[in-house]
Length: 234
Image (tube, rainbow, N blue to C red):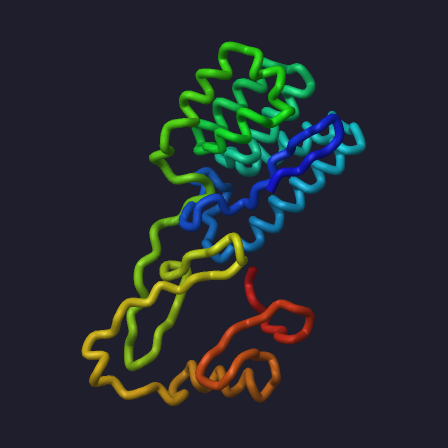
């Protein structure tokens, strides 16, 4: 979304998840797609903190926060863009262009925002800006941070499917994981699952405890207070 702040600042707030199947190769540890809800929440919270600092005209602190964010997530185009905006406002034109060019190189493609963002007014007067627009107008052929390997379909065995991080995608707009399940072989000959096996035992246990939500035969987990209090990573 776009935030209009002090000095007509048009600050770009973008969720950490810019591409459903992507992640930065230079993270300090190997991260899982299961980490994405945490990463998304952390990024949004930091962006909101920067906005508050700019509203309070604490530009030194806002810049320090953005530089910290670029160190943590160096391949985030939105963070690079926001740092470029702040540097442009502070009339640090050369470095602002460096960050803006890097944002575009990493996949930033919002031409309308580039052309209308009041934060970039100083940069639009510079002949270098037209070169940035020219690159941003081209389709981005890479994967925008954060990126993960393309999921593979989970295998149906004995009427049951076990999903793991290899079979999952993530929809940032609604904050939900998406399971990719392949079609079972000879599906017409399979018997309907009736809650047998480990999965069935776990579901029955959770229903008895009152820690599972949903109807028998389907299962989901809510995070709205104590409606469902499973120990879910994320």
